[in-house]
Image 1 (cartoon, one colour):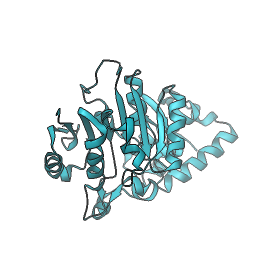
Image 2 (cartoon, rainbow, N blue to C red):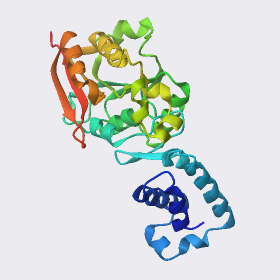
Image 3 (cartoon, rainbow, N blue to C red):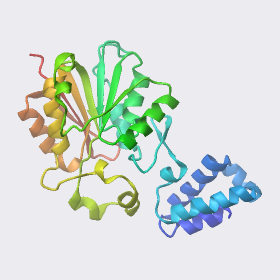
Image 4 (cartoon, rainbow, N blue to C red):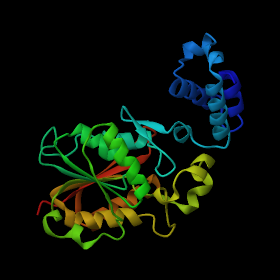
Length: 288
């Protein structure tokens, strides 16, 4: 199978530009061939084993499986993360959350800071922040043991220290609310599930059929379910002046502001993503 044959098959489910981009990713990431190599016809020189693998990749792609799962990796903030069906594929909007400067930490390298990432998935947020702030103490929670295995492997690959724990934010064990854990965190950051079930009809089929639903959806009658739980936890776990950073559903940006205000958070600020949608919010716990 040639590059042209691959992308022409993929236009069954993608537009031409995306089909070509996916085909290029396959040849570059899996077989080490650049676009220049393809123009020179070197993709025709793949071994029989490589051609067999290419056919298998094409089959998975034609079934709508995202290219990141097929290749087993996704880029995020300049790093490559292992991904599989147990974790969401990291997205550019979440990169913007990590890069929302300045993060309110006590020192440029994070010395003395304690950061918690809730719903870590692949670990992309926690690992990125641990690399940015190497002297910070970074912890990451997820309800899924399979996701935590992926995150731990990503931390190992990127040589950063993150403490991973299996915790359900909707049912936090008492020990996380007591002792020296209370009023200790400088920052809680989270990209929790925030898509209502009623929004399924507008979503891409490859997302619906392949990405983990527990990391995507919330009940239609309670779209702020996870944000409320995290903000309530933050009332106890954040130190005075500590911050919440969230990626949010733009449909509920105003409701998020109202909820945080009613919970006595201050300095509430919305931020639009690169597409102009209100995608991020931050808020500060009162100083006294």
